Length: 281
Image 1: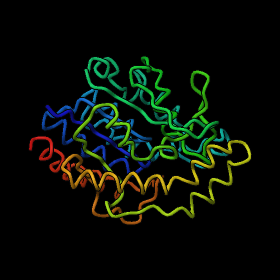
Image 2 (image 1 turned 90 degrees about the vertical axis):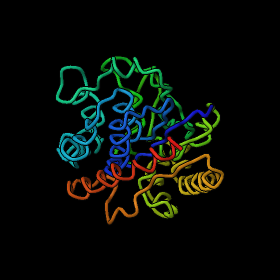
Image 3 (image 1 turned 120 degrees about the horizontal axis):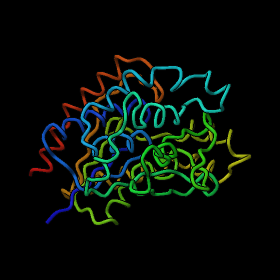
Image 4 (image 1 turned 135 degrees about the horizontal axis):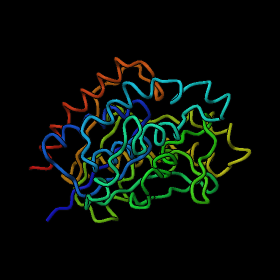
């Protein structure tokens, strides 16, 4: 019997696409027993496993547009342009504006993994979602902690950056954990190959204090492209289904323009039919 897995690579505001895919899965009553998320993709999975359809949509289209969430003001005053404590704490804790149903998430029998990058070693760290506690969503904050515009996020003795710099498409982890059919949600077109130039330039800005993380950052394009090619090969074998938008226009990772974000969410909701077909095949 096949064991299905779900990978969401995240990508800041582009993560609205994955949110749309998962909302369609929830609407169809499909609960995949294994999920591994990177950055915003890990937060999408938290709401998915909690059964909270529509929750993430509000983060992308409303909350993330607030200066408290993402702004240069945050960068100048707190050294974190993306305030992960606001997004995954002030908004998400019990009794707050849009709380994660933590109890429902923990009742799920799904295996849930969150990818972060160790700021000192540059290596991927795979947090088990069950390491989290009510109102302590440290792994989500670590996984979404964007380098350069944020200082490393401290949680339980470690320092972390966004998981996308260490394992951007964690297909090998999913296979090692026993998945033999995997839905891979990308947030760029499936034929997009990452270029290293910008990553190398930005990596220099953290190289002095975090040289190993900088090296991982500089190598991200190479790793992403290799993992994407592996997914394509597995797709030819019927083991993987890549779900990706046909276009994202000119959307940036930290875009605050609500209309393209909404359109990308709707693309994901529509493309969720492809994931359903693959699962029910």
